[in-house]
Length: 186
Image 1 (tube, rainbow, N blue to C red):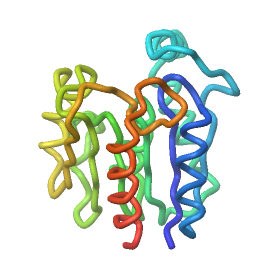
Image 2 (image 1 turned 90 degrees about the vertical axis):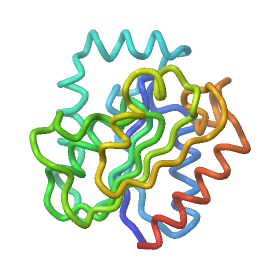
Image 3 (image 1 turned 135 degrees about the vertical axis):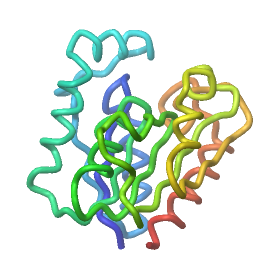
């Protein structure tokens, strides 16, 4: 079974992110879900992004890196949208990464100053018409990741895998979850 460090999106540690983590736990995985916002959640993506800007994206990344400090190095790093920042950073720079799961976002691999580590598998999931993913450069970044499994789902919703948000797409989320569970059988 895998040990997973899962980071929430810009709206915070929502019930939907917690439910996703619980689904992975029920499949036998250990899942760590740090709260990078100290209990705050936001009703809209715009409000959450504003909070992240005010806090500072580098601070969010630093909080994510700090969450990994006392955990084993042999982790699968996962992130929803904003949570991709610390997840991808750690997968690329912290020795021992077992894999990465990037939901609704992807950063150009050069952003973190080192190439994607050889032998570290990665899945990237996003909707093919999501303006936050497909039109903002994240899709292009996903295509730059060596050996990445890129999964595009029909639609224009961001955060479609968070069951607590209006953007939730049950069919796409179920397919994403099945692919993630298969990936975690590393």
